[in-house]
Image 1: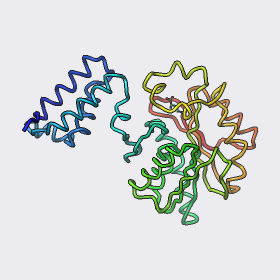
Image 2 (image 1 turned 135 degrees about the vertical axis):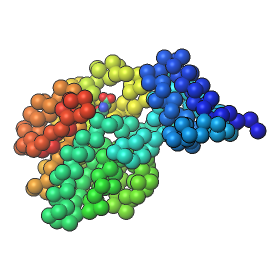
Image 3 (image 1 turned 90 degrees about the vertical axis):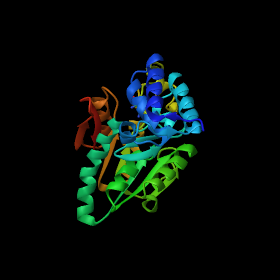
Image 4 (image 1 turned 120 degrees about the horizontal axis):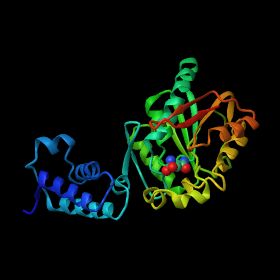
Length: 284
Ligand code: GLN
């Protein structure tokens, strides 16, 4: 038999994470308990006496050990929700973050207009990682076709799985390219959440980011702005004349990024702030 009651398991998970000094022990314990046992949030309240099999108890214990050692909860689960959809993570992908949802919202406005006018639209996501940005938009707009570009084979494989699991494979292509190197054709929209952390600040990031997000997805060069220069200088060749490019930016980068794009002939057309009130996404 073996097994353990769901309520005792959930309590034990919380106590272990609290004792280890994890920042959000209650939330993390709930997420990991749901993930390891297959119980829903409602089950935790309404079926406290459900018996959980020993193998699931063992899986939860292993997950708690990893969490206590500092691994982020979604890395352990291998999946994170973004824009209401599940996205698998892998070593080559940045964890999709809620802040990036404002970039999706900013693009959604203009994509809706384009589709209303022409019946369809095409978008390329530069440095797609899990594919979160393009796949969230494909899921929202059946008239949209999307390309995800990345240099990491691991990221591209993960993006393909995410496209399939979110039901948009038929309208999604994953392309291996070092930024624009292998890209061809023209698009109505370019989206990108490029690496934008100034190199010497990477060491100062929280452990969960520094040790578990791929450095290639964080390192924006000396001043953090390298890839805005790449995007600004190449995008014109891949956009239709009335096309738009939207990028995520880091703290304090708004003015510099506006200048970089202005020097390449782009005019700021809109921006959006994240939940913390920081300007997080810009569109040209
Ligand atoms: N948002 C990430 C962080 O600061 C950075 C992501 C990026 O460089 N695009 O943790």
